[in-house]
Image (cartoon, rainbow, N blue to C red; front, side, top):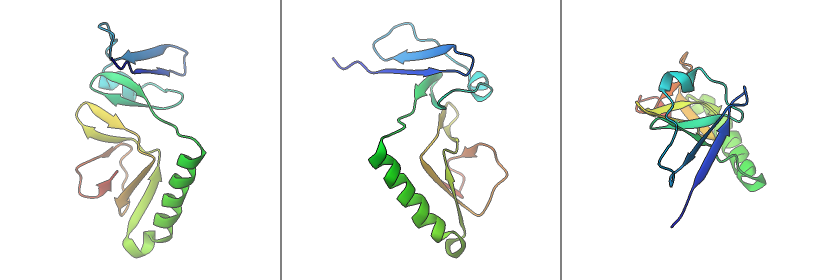
Length: 120
């Protein structure tokens, strides 16, 4: 049996934890997730907080290469490149991808995947 343990600590020190082998998992509402500061920032999946993989040096280097590559082409392609931008993928899922690209600009604070201009 594989047991996955994910945890995240909020700015106020209160912790949330999710363990797929645990029967008693604390549910968090979308509203609470969106109004709480987590450090480091966390994803929200089906009423649960999930720790994000922050990566190591190779991951960081590849992320930088993507950002530089896309950033150098933003005017020609009419795109904007965002890092660590919250994206709502479904009604109960919010992810924070390493790199997010939009066509043009937007005033939205949280991007919605499925909108034609958002690619995460």
